[in-house]
Image (tube, rainbow, N blue to C red; front, side, top):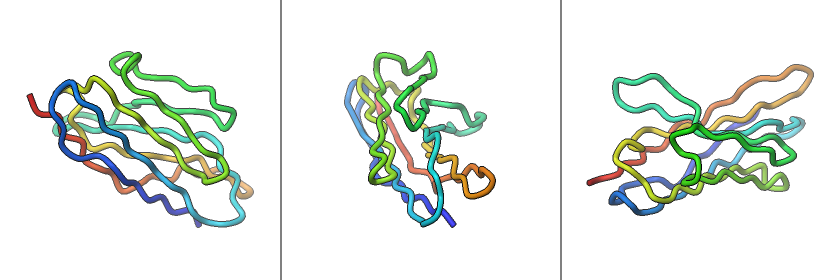
Length: 118
């Protein structure tokens, strides 16, 4: 089975930068799309950014121009660089991967807290 380990995140002042990463482990799987969602307290989980294996990325309008998603296919790792952070970016950030072995399953990371203070 595929397991995801997230790292990074933490506390930063508004205007600052943070990065998070998510590494997938497990053998015999093809890793397709990878991405990040976030969930603020009392809110629904929302897409932040995702990327195909070929590197085609899409972003939520609220983060365009500030966040950059990237991936290293050799390491099965996806990254999210967050710049010009705002207090409204405060949330738990969850990575996911679409893993295929016969059929495709979406696997989720455990979540990492990002807190932006004013």
